[in-house]
Amino acid sequence: MRSRTLCASLLGIAVALLAAAASAGAGSTLSSHGQLLNVRANTNQSSNWFGYNQGTLEQGGTLFNSITGDWTVPTASLHAPAQDEYSSDWIGIGGGCVDAGCTVTDNTLIQTGTEQDVSAAGQTSYSAWWEIIPGPSIGISMTVDPGDHMHASIAETVPDANVWVITLQDVTRNETFTQTVPYSSTHGTAEWIEETPLILGTNAGFAALPSLTSPVFDLATVNGHPANLNASEQMQLIDSNGSVIGSPSAPDPDADGFNACTWATSCAAPSGS
Image 1 (cartoon, helix red, strand yellow):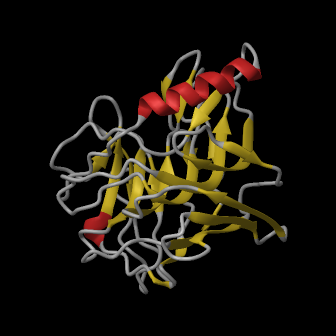
Image 2 (cartoon, helix red, strand yellow):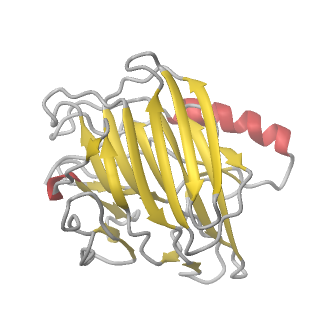
């Protein structure tokens, strides 16, 4: 088991989100995805991430200049009564553990994905977004529904140029978003994640996790090659009591995808690729 202590730039995130909150007005609920804090040392357990994370040192010094991944937007339902619940699925470069022992962490992150939320009354909402830390997430004008097949890509225009093209495509609906943005990345990690985002404002803190169907991540690549996911790169999600509430499966047969199971201590791998 590998240490998964994620070094969080929470102060930077909070400053950016406070500015966004001021412009959004009272009563708005804002969330931030990305770098978050692992509360367990010497384990592969995080307080808000679960999925797969690769680091440059564990990959023999390889730097990450591009990443892709596909997933199915999960169906969200209320897990516990009388509370708002939030989740997101995304790919990203940065923000995770650089080495297998997690003695080195990455404090940059560029990412894109979908969000699946449930209100305390049981009303669901689905959306798309992109984000560069320490800024707040930026919504993408795109129709997103459960069951939609998403394809995401983040790639430098030229290696080490620190100009990135972010692409999020709803394959089911044939809708595509593309954004080119300058961003200084360490290129240190790559990840495919299901997350409980950070909530700012009323009831601030890590969001409560809804019940979700598996997003069935697939077609994961880094630097234009299959990701070759390894079970040692898994990360589980734990609650404030240290109990496991989210688990990724072993990799699928061609090691480029996996299932993610909420409110479970284990998760069966996809039978096909």
